[in-house]
Image 1 (cartoon, rainbow, N blue to C red):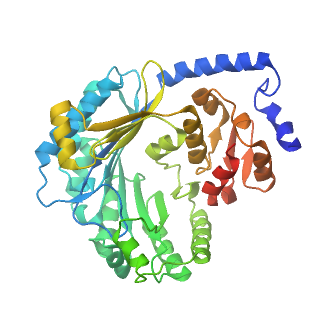
Image 2: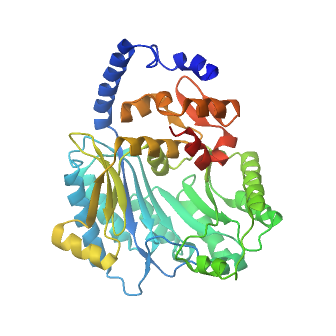
Image 3: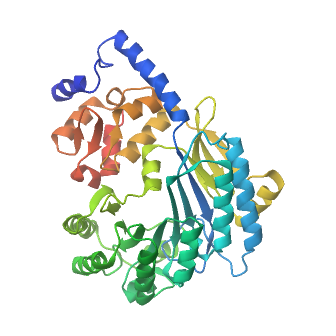
Length: 428
């Protein structure tokens, strides 16, 4: 523990390890932090649950419905948004909106009118600034008109996340995607023309039969045409999906652990060579084009969940007690609740202090930024290094998995590759 103890005094003028006087000073800092958090920006997630088809690997809350009642869904979203803003004391404009994220499902299937109604509601009740990030997800199959993209931009959307997943025809078929490589390419180029520097793209590695060379070729092609943000994921087998059934029955075999590791390491190298910063386990940005919405989630910032199946993490406006919220998942049931009760929120549960600390640690270890020591103290009232397993922390620093500075504790590139295991090791 000698190294950790030697570094600890650098973290505060008077460490909590040393004296009751220091604890009093730190408690004052904690109280000041609560005041700061009362003014802290918050985020909003809005869920559009409908898709044109269901992918083989997807276990998200999404539904294929050829007869969507757009007007009813739009009314319900506006109703719940207004109700939840008032419930959490967010309708006074004292906490500006950091980010708004339209996810799904496939939000690009929704009418532009939906986005306009919701953004107008937020503008009338809250504070949106020039820096508020307003993102939406879209699939290539429903990103077919550059004029529609321009309309969305004019309404207020300022960032677009395109779910390409692959530029290989056979892989798209395997995944159950409803677009072609040429459709994906055209959609990407159109989105880049409308939102230059503000387009993200998803790509999945680790398909059945995929070799390391296959992945490297696809990634090189992608980096020649992509904008400034990439989300790169390993194909994951989720229970209840068609892919899970195929793997369980032996009809599909995915790459083993060694090949998956090789793909990940090649990804790190190739993205770095292309000027991308690996700022979170699965996310890469150049020119500092980070996702503000996702970054806020990893930092522990409050976010309001709106729509069927949406969940949130919110603070009580007076006590600052944090809560998780869960909405009714079924769209029909959720709309009915909104019409009768004003909200489809079905459950609200208090986040216990230990759970909050654990969540901050797990999320922080997924990012190169790591955990800000002062912010951890403001949010929890406990010094991070006193909370963690000290022997494990020192071991991880010596092993090159963690780096400790006067301001933060963060994973190295090697540490981020084993983020989940790292978090478990560090827990007290």
